[in-house]
Amino acid sequence: MCGAGISGLTVAGQLAERGWEVTLLEAAPERRTQGYMIDFFGPGYDAAEKMGILGRLRELSYSITEARFVRPNGRSQSLDYGVVAANEGGKLLSLMRQDLELTLFEALPESVEVRFGSAVVAVEDRTDYVTAVLADGTRISGDIVVAADGIHSAVRHSIFGDSAAFDRQLGMHTCAYTFDSPKLHAKLGETLVSTDELDRMVGLYGLHNGQVALFAAHRVDDTVLPANPREAIQAAYAGMGDDVAEALEKCPEPSKIYYDQVAQIELPVWSRGRVVFAGDACQAVSLLAGQGASLAIAGGLLLAEKLSGDLEPSAAFAEYEEEWMPVVADKQAAGRRAANGFLPHTTFQLWKRRVGLALLTAPVIGKFVTSAVTGTKALNQ
Image (tube, rainbow, N blue to C red; front, side, top):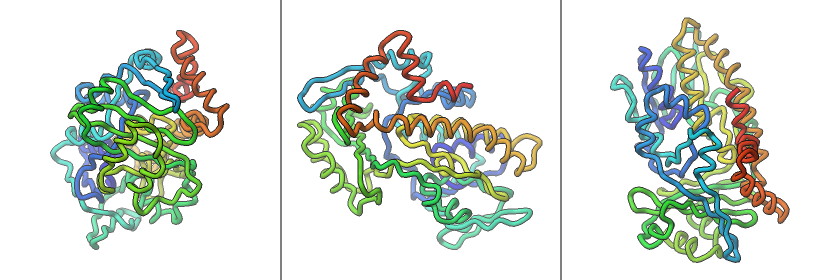
């Protein structure tokens, strides 16, 4: 297994429970703690229930009662989060992404060997085995390699070459971090406050540990990642009000910031030989789609189930791809449709977003709007 993110942890745990001998390789020196709040619903919610981790996720979830969108003139528009949950049949949890990873990590069977600081730089595929080559020269062989090493997958580059060929940039950067502010934490309560203007947004919300979390995104002309994300953040979100100004002043050092491109990965095939891809390495839908974590868990569970049947690996890979690729394609399309609503670029797009938020509270229309934006209908088919 390459990658100890949501998908990698899911596949590793589920394969180990089904009798596989699993070595989980992660490039980072320790489990990552950076991340942002996600709405966890859809197929991943059902998969988590099937895996027996839903109770733990509920313990770690947040009670977000309201989302408030604040305009530059100080006026605001509120959305009752209970309505959003109701539109999903109550099957929705507000979770920090890192808490979802923590839950999956806690659920790993003891038999899984986890090696942090183990970056896979190449894969050598043979007829009857496959070898992962690590940055330090270590070689680990096995029956298969599951590449779940994220949107910037080194394994994908090793197998298929230039990653740019599969990388659909959506013209945005995103970031997240936490900081201390007792006064702002008390002010936020159980409300997620987001700015409401063109080309950039900042969301602020309180955490269980008393800290405040920032999640932000902005449009960029050049998608290349900045050398200093802290400086880029402070420049991109300047002049957005006093609360944002405090958050920018308390922006931590780059190592404690999550900063990345907003992009989708469109890989035409998800396996080659004894190597199969999972999660963002092959199916990144982007934060615009809203169900990346959900798809990572559900797709990871599906892959583990296929591999644990009576099929040879190549046949299991083919069934997994045939069943899951159309789901991901639908979700990616929904994410692209949502781009101008997530970060409006024109006054008309901003108006449209505000009207859409208002419609979410309508009894019947709200369900339709939710499905149209999130692609829920396609995922539940």
